[in-house]
Length: 93
Length: 440
Ligand SMILES: [Zn+2]
Image 1 (spheres, rainbow over the protein chains, first blue to last red):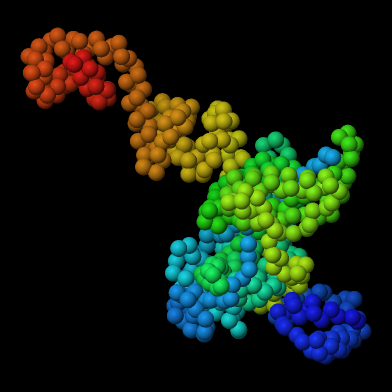
Image 2 (image 1 turned 60 degrees about the horizontal axis):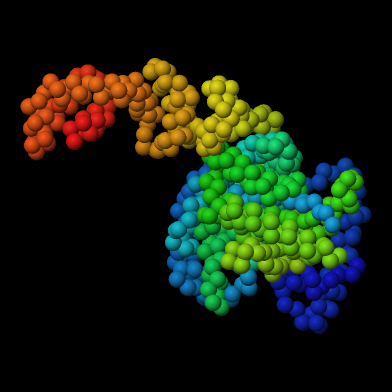
């Protein structure tokens, strides 16, 4: 199976060098091939699910509780300004 | 060449719940100190577990019901993946293929029906402020509940779009689930606009949709949506007229330039790679629960309008004004109840409310009725009668008149008292003014 590695890398926000792209293409193909094996399982009578816990309707009441303080929220960032997280400018018109 | 405009709408409504969608942080972020309403969940820290807000889900379902949607018996959340600094997890929790509500419909005043594709629940992003070479992030808004309402491409004019939007705003306000204030950003609109060619005026429409669409963002008023749509129709017509196809893209409305401008594309080809949110178990609703929601729905503006015209015999125009806001419609009905004892009828109340622009926050309905009763009495004592009585009082009390005219202004109190004996329920102010006029 052919994989567009630069596209996948871009979606994953990963900068890759050309040699890395070649390396990952091979690895990703192998993984996909391995998953092909799953097709051998007969799933005709198995219901599709995305959950394995069997839980349903887990919700919370609409109550506001204490949040982190601004200092705590920002405590792990190296880059801040006046109580905001700071990142390099996002281009927008 | 003749074209038919095809417009669909995506509207985001921010719910006014107390807490956020998936954590207990306060959802009231407007004007608050930055990054003071955050926790590991809404900061997207590793290992945090999102738990959905029950009220937000209930309100999403109520919006769906108000738009005549089918409510799903089984629903789930999904992850929508993209990278942007306003999205700390690298994905937004949203709903993809099993939203809470689908296939609704809403009618415009011309009878045209607008299809509602879906109403789903998701979370808001953080707020970005651009400052020189930096972007500043405030996560107070991150995770605030958002309901997205998507229509079919059924609109043909900007007017229809605006009518629908006003209706939607009115509905969510009636439901009491959002302030739906456009300027504060609790209601955000994204129309997608394209043009379909008509072969000749009389031939049948080509049934397929155009092979492109232009989405317009950054619209924060009903006026801008109208202008943005008009602008796009003109721009796209010009492109089509020279035999080209407009580029499928996202554009932003620029109020200064009075036009839409192309926006950089966030992510190539909208490749969001949705997949089911593994941290949140699905939501199952029984028919009993759904019918419970239906029975708890408040009376919505359309039905209230019909009831007002029928029950109170009001013209449609009046009923429309009275039902525009829930508070005013409640005020009116309370005044009608209070008016019954004093033989003040619905039409009289309507006239006063509409023509006098009554301040309903400061004048209680019962007070309003009192004012109407008084003004009715004064009207009965017409000016001719009032004038007669005042002449009589002046003639019978020459001393007081003389006192007044020679500067003892307080003497008017005596004369007023005499005149008032003839109009025990009359408006003293009106009598006083008439008296002063005569004494000039
Ligand atoms: Zn939080």
